[in-house]
Image: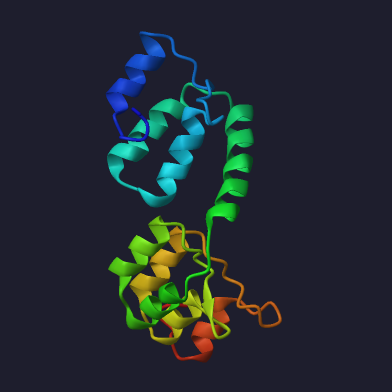
Length: 161
């Protein structure tokens, strides 16, 4: 709970004073690092990041690599296509985009062949583009490996490119 709630001092106390093991798993098989990485997918507030930074100082790099690999697989299973995300990207509604992304809407969501990133680029919505990048959107447009940067230039969106 200390990681998930962003209590950096509690994390430090548990690790240093009480010598808790950073790789201990709960009944669901999740270790604190896994819960923290999944939490950071949706919550990128400073206190959450600081509690994770404290935890990362206490774990071995092999454990971090293993957890990241498993986390990526878990995220792939949780992400869902959201036509609403594409609509909000086109409408420059970053607040609703953020809500959907935190609820595991796939940043690569599409509607009628257009991705959320393409909708944001075509509309010239730089903040929407930046938000999707934070959530690891693919920069590939699916059009002969053309990157979104070229598509932005093609649509006169030089600032976004």
